[in-house]
Length: 490
Image 1 (tube, rainbow, N blue to C red):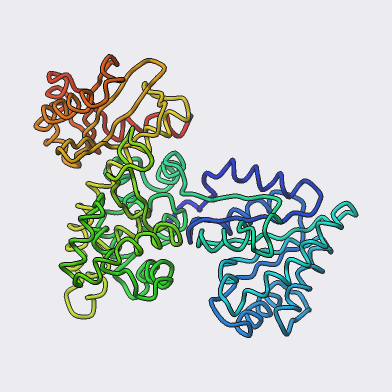
Image 2 (tube, one colour):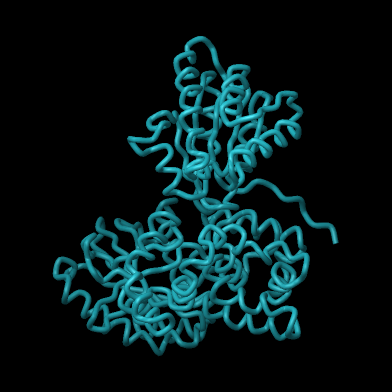
């Protein structure tokens, strides 16, 4: 079967920023950060391809000692057709300076590894070159240096900490996040279809990571049934994503925090007390006492975990709940890791089936996040019937109030309460609970009592009979077809 060729999707504002930087005609030092596989390198390639051809050098820094870094750098010099070679980190910094003076764009990927103690001196060596280049920029230096990194805290320590050698040296800073849902829909329209179940399934797995969608496309399964997708991408010896999480997420942790991450994958929205109790049961009281420190590291350094607060809560509220930030990591830990690890010992079909069943549970939680993101994206693009005045969030408290989504439209004094279910048949049975919880919410937030309250039931696809039942209960039905309408044309 002839597959349509892959293209470059989304990222228009980021492309415009990079092209503007390249077209300024003077020295630049750019910091680009974002999770691994998010498309940082592809974005640079796309920006360079659109402008005047220029010499480039891309080098990925290994997690190694100085000799390993120098050896890897020499390998990239050879790959890019450059005759120079270096014998030390000092020579490497000086060569980067010379190449930039000649108009070359030098990109150093995984730059955060220079935060490691054996490599840290390179930052001072590079500082001397960067300062000299900044001073010479008026003399017509048109080249530039781009540093890319995937560990936010370590990149910040290298470039934004006041005590760091490279502090305040960057001329441009760009953070690359997931593709928006409109861009994901462009991919599906070009290579599969906009079926709402497919959107939820793939978004629960890949969120907005273009590399993963391209892997599925190259395996010929972006349009396939879900078990075929799982088998081809995860369960075969040649599957491209079989070791993705271990290689690009979990190797940084070197075996630490495993129990906590697995718990959050299976129990998204757990409180600090929930996590401590689970860790005490799994690993003992001493391990439970370390939970606060573990969460701080996973939240601030690795950005694998985020603490969410209910809508309208003050920033220091104690009712925060913890979630894994990345859909792929959550799907891997909750549904895929153990079945994939057992492939040598059990029938493949049974393991794929087990992973698929577990992934269905993950999708139930992912639907809330997807619906919230769709509300935000529609509002940002000026489509739909509900312009947001605040980031959409859920609400909960200790008195068992639980509302999946709460949206505010301050301009028109409207407040919308939503419940999300993967199975649409369950929606009519939870409307009364939604209304009761909304009434209790309004009683606790008197500033919104006189706002117009609206109730919404959300599922991937809602059939006409369920829509009729919801309408009779005074509840609006919205499915992923409704919420994605007009999104790619906005």
